[in-house]
Image (cartoon, rainbow, N blue to C red):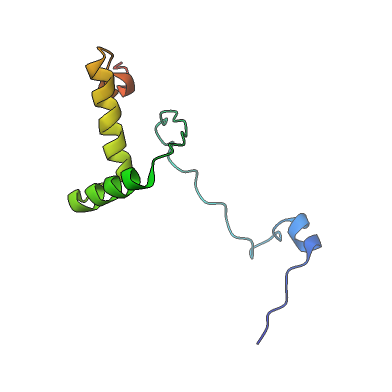
Length: 92
């Protein structure tokens, strides 16, 4: 059996008033602020990608975690702050 589709007019008018209307849900607890992140595309040669993928599978970790570990080592080898220092939240 097919149901009758809701018309655009019914949607634009909003919910019906009266006891049949569902009450608004209580406001959700404020989520803690998230750190800003930026997306970066990395182009890997196919053999490098395959090896990284296999390593992540064998160690049961995500490829992203291995890439972040590598960036942390690059920063530290060059005398720069590591990922922990860069992403630490300031204490109040």
